[in-house]
Image (cartoon, rainbow, N blue to C red; front, side):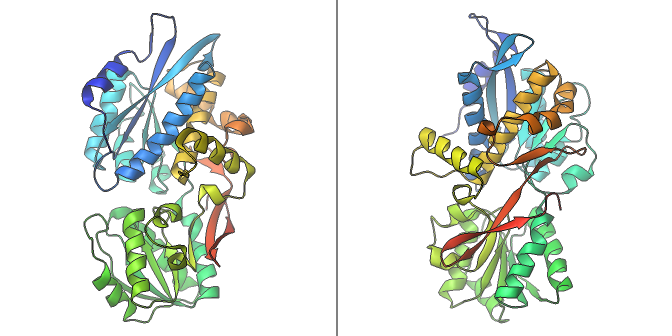
Length: 386
């Protein structure tokens, strides 16, 4: 993937929150996330959602604020998944670019930014992460976009215990997010009478051969394997287990996406798995409409991962909040209208059902997961904000 050089970013940023020669005002929306390294595809997906929303908003004339039309400029910076670089990038975007909103797609970076975003100059953190700690901090200027990951625990555990058995083998990633997911899910599994086997955690970002760890996990005769990290590495874990004869099911953390794993392994290897519902198979009519829109922009051979659709919706919500607040720059005023914006956003701008923004700053939405049965994605409807 080609990364944008720093010079073009500075030139774009110089025009942010200013008037062009044609009289059009522009507001910068910042992004700091991984655009290089092992998580670059994930970062690019989140950025795609923001850029797609900004393009649609600008094509329609921009954000209408007090009779003025304000265009949106997305300014991305690469933080390589390092929280300290996320914080540095956010400060740059706010101080040099006057960004009232900075999106970040990983919990470490989000938590680092939350340490100063409510101070002056204040700005909203567009948080694309399902880590519950993001809301537990009580930060007053956070918009958390996806559902918190504990929402998956009960449905995933019950579905797998009912369909495959009670012995849970574990091959999770070694990063902090995976550790917390593993801890929480394992507790729910045991609460349902299941048996939790050895935790064979491994670094998904640096490991290329998962055959030995798969062999170790399978030696304990699990009925189900718990796996999860970046999609590509997760697919390789599943492939290694299947090639060694594993016939059981997989619980896949929400970090990995079926549609991306399916590019590396056939659907037959994903059989009897539970995980995030691919947007292209989502039963909501709004999702189908978003997929059609994405295909028109990116090509019929490309399907949008969930992070594309949800960040598109979040950007639409915040643009609508700007209109309701009568400002494109006052972060506190914009955040205060986010709930109303989400509840009144026209269906044509939604990638799925949005129910509002709760008092903690969490986007509420109907959440649907998937159980792969017979090569098809069977919907699992989950309780909101578990």
